[in-house]
Length: 134
Figure 1 (tube, rainbow, N blue to C red):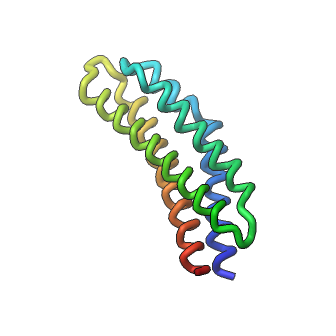
Figure 2: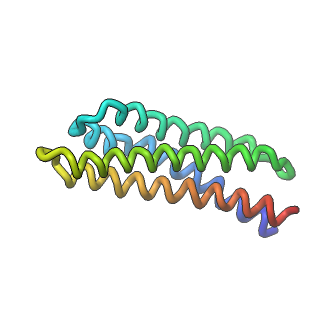
């Protein structure tokens, strides 16, 4: 019974995180328009896209299939990694660019950190579910 709860919580977190991230992409766009980093837009795009891949992968999770849980957890961790790289770019820009509206970029950092946390927790819940069912 607990197994279904862990997977259900993880799936709900992934669905909510990816949809919220897609809806509020404008937070990233406002920050990106201020930055002088050539990879920032591409990393942000990959961050959002991998979140959507995680969303679609959650629909493939069946009752006893371990491979789908592992793959979805890996996608969650890759998404979190891309988000962490984006946060690193934001923080670097804050320290380097003098004419930067720091409030806009801080908002993007906080938003990214919340999304990253949701994906990490979701991935850990999926892995915990696998361990619990062994």
